[in-house]
Length: 422
Image 1 (cartoon, one colour):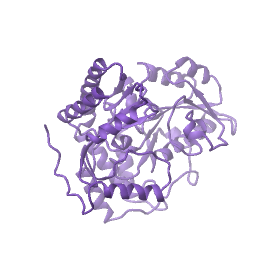
Image 2: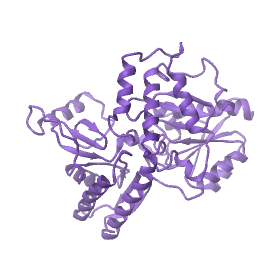
Image 3: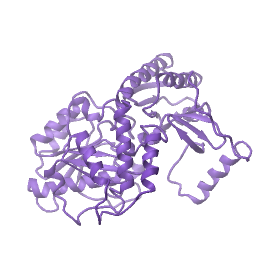
Image 4: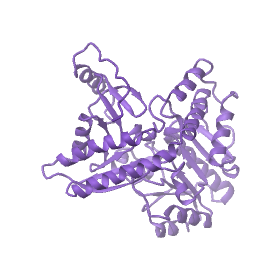
C-alpha cells in the first residue's frame, strides 16, 4: 500500500474543536449557498488532502475537476510564485509579456486560430454565447435581436442570470426570474429533436456538454456528438462544446469530443486550465468567429493577466508531459471494473455505474430506512475518501489525474466496504 506524504501536526486546539469552530464561522458569516460535507480542509498534495486536525483523505472530487494535475503541483506553484514576484496584473489596457505565449500554446494544442482568456467557467460560457450571437448576425445574416441558441435538457453551464435562463434545474432557476429570451431546450442525446430545432433559420449555435457532469455524469450514446456536429454544420449552426469539466484529460482524451473526432466551432475551457491554482478560463474559435467581436465589445479586468497566463502554460505542460490523459483513460477502466463488481455484489444498493476516464458516477438506490447517497459520502469521508452526491442518488467520483493504480484500488476497497455495509 502506497503511503501518503507526511501529515502536518494538528494545531493546539483539541481534536474536532477547531473544525467545529471554523464551520460555525462559515455558517454565521457566509452565505448559505452550499451544503458541504462536514470536513474542514487545510492542506493538499497530489491526490491527498488533510483536515485541520491532520486526518488524511483521498480527494475523489478534484474541486469538480479543477484539480486534474493534483493539489499544489510543484511545477504550477513554482510558475505561480515566480511570476507573482514579477508582475500580476496590468489589465488589457496594455500588452503584457505572458498573454501571447499562453494564447499561442492554447491555439497550437487545440488547433484553433484565436483564444480569448477570461476567469471563471461561467464567464467563458457567457463569452461563447456572445460570440455565437455576433457571428449569427454578421456571418449568418440573422435579423437583429432574433438569434437563438439551442441547449440540452439537464444542462449545467453556470449560474449567472444569463445562463440560468436556459437551465432546467429548479434549484438554479427558482426565484431568479425573469429569464432572458433566445434559447431553446431540446432533450440531451436526442438527434431528432436537435435536427428539428436547427431548421429554424434564427438558430446560431448549439451549446452542449459532451458528458453532462452536474447532471450525474450522463454519457451520450456513441455517435451522438459526431452526428450533432454534422447536423449543425449542415444548417450553418455553430457547435459549441462546453469542456470546462470534461476537458483537459479528465475523460481519457484531451477533450471529450475527441472520442468522436469532433472539432467544435467554439471550445470552452476552464477549471483545470490552471490546475486549480486560480480562476482561468478560455474560449477558442477560428478567426471568422472570434474576430466578430471588436475592441470595447467584450472584456475583463483580470482576464488574460500575466499571472494567470503563466499558470495556464505550466498547467498545460504538466498535463502533456506527465501523460495524465492516458493515465485517466487506463485507470478509469480500472475504477469502473471495480465498481461494476460492487454493483454485482450489491445490486440492491448500486443501481448503475457509468463514466469515461476518471469522470465517473455510481447511482445509489434509496435505502428503506431513508438513507441516501449523502449517507454513503459521509461514511466514505469518515474512512478517508472525499466524494460528493449530486441530485440525491448519484455519487460523482473524479480523483486528480495523477492518481496511481495502487491508490485507485485502495480507495475502491474502501468504497466496496462502505457499500457492503450500507
